[in-house]
Image 1 (tube, rainbow, N blue to C red):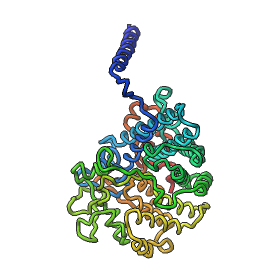
Image 2 (cartoon, rainbow, N blue to C red):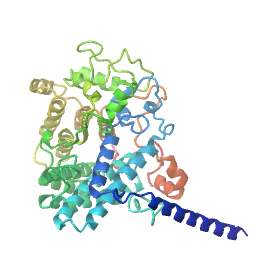
Image 3 (tube, rainbow, N blue to C red):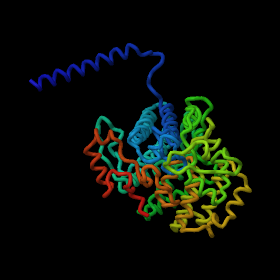
Length: 482
C-alpha cells in the first residue's frame, strides 16, 4: 500500500510540474525571450565575482576582518570568528558556485554552440571564461580546502558531488587549464567592450592577467611542491605578467545602484557605522610612518593622528580612526589582481631561487611602489618610505618571509582575502587574538551547514581529507606549512 501511495504521489508531482510548465509558456512574451546570452552571463559572473571580493557586508564577506584591516564597533560576532550565525560560509560557497561558476559554465556552453561565431571568436571567449573560472576555483579551494571540483556544476549527473584534493587534483588542473588557453590570447577574439568589463576586449591585457593568475597558482605551491611551483612560476613570468598598475584587473563601478562598489552600499548607503581601523594595521603603519595612512584612513582624530580599535572588541566609533574616503566612493574600482600583488609573488619566487628576471629586493621595491602609487601617494612618499631602514629590503628586520609578508599584507589593504592569504602563507605580520572570543585567526572557512546536512557523506570524506583537524577553523590548508 505504501508503494502504491508513493507511485501515485510521484505521478501527481510530475503532472503538476507539466501543468505549471504549460501555463508558464502561456505567460512568456515571444518578443522578449527569456534566454540569456553568453555575453550577459559572462558580464554577470564577472560582476558577481568582483562584488563578492569587494564587499564588507557582514552577511557575505568577512575577509577584511580576518586580515585585521577592519574591526567592528557594536556587533562583534564576525570579528570573533562566529561564521555560522549569519551563514557566511554558506553565502560565500553559493555565490562563487552559483553566481560565478555556473554562469561561466553556461556562458561557455552558449559560446561553443553559437554557429554565428568564428573559431577564433569562440577560442577567445572560452579563454576569458577559463581565466575567471580558474580564479573562482582557486578562491573556493583556498577558502575551504577540499571542495567538489571534478563532479561539481553537473547537478543532473552528480547532485551530491564528491570532494577533491587540491594538492593532487585541483591545483594541477587549474595550471593545465590556464596553459591550455594562454596562447589563444595572441590570436583569438574575445568578448567585446560591452560584455568584458575588465579589459574591454583587450586580449593582450587578458594574456597578462592569465599569466599573473598562473603565477599566483604556482607560487602558492612553493613550500609543498617546489618542482611544479618552479615550472609554473617561471613559464608564467617568461610569458608575461603585470608590469605596471596599468595592467591591473579592475572592475570600474558606476555612481548609481545597482552598479556601485559594494563598499559604498556597506559604508554609505546603509547609513551605518559598523567598522573602524584596527590597532593591528594602524600600529604597524604608525611605527613605520607609512605614507598610506591618510590614503587608507580618514584623519577624523586630527591631522596625522591614527588610532586603531582593538581587534574583536566593542569599539567606540568616535574615538577610533575611520576608514578612508576612497572606500566611501561609489565608483571606487573593485580589484581582482594588481601589480603590487604580482610584484610580491615575484619577490618570493626570487627568494626561492626561481628564475623570474630579477632579485627579491627589486620586486619587493616594485610592490611597495605600486601600492603607494595606486592609492595616490607621491613620488616623494615612495622615496622617503623606501629609504627607511625598517622598510628597505637590505635592512628591514626579520627573515625574508617576514619582510615580504609584512609589506605584502600592508599593500593588500581593502583586499581582505589576499591579505588573509598572505598571513596564512608567510605567518607575517603577527595578527592579534580576537578580544571577546580569545580565538586566533582562522586558517580556513568551515564548510557550509547545507553541505553537512544535504551532502553529508561527501562532506565527511572531504573533512577527513583535510587532515587531523578536520572541518575546523584551525585546520591549515595543504600549502600552509610554515
